[in-house]
Image (cartoon, rainbow, N blue to C red):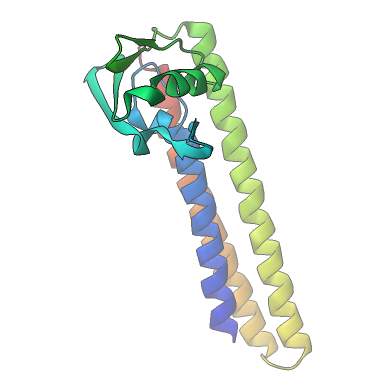
Length: 185
């Protein structure tokens, strides 16, 4: 019973970190990254479809993404979805492929992105702490229901706290790496 609490807590905390990494992958750091298009949905015949499912996305140059859409009729819909997104980039097409050219980030924009990274990191830390609180409440309930002893409760509390500390350190290292990437000129 008690190990179930620890396992589910670890799983929920790891999912939180995975979400953070996905969100940070979507932040553009001055260079083209095909992951930026994963979360943009195109209305393709009435179905919201991610861009990578509509064609090939390649990076011919560090600051350019090339989208070769398989169905040429979908090109205007893909362009429209990119324009509506938060990328802030105007796509251009030659009838066969769509080009996205990423401008150099200026110092001000880099600092804004670092603030966004820190905010997302803080949100993840809050989520981790909320998961810790839920686990501790479950552990106390099991002790109250006489399913575990007081010593078991203390041991589990320590394990949950160690897991929390380790994952907060991991969040900090993920944030530091992303900040370094953004601030690199």
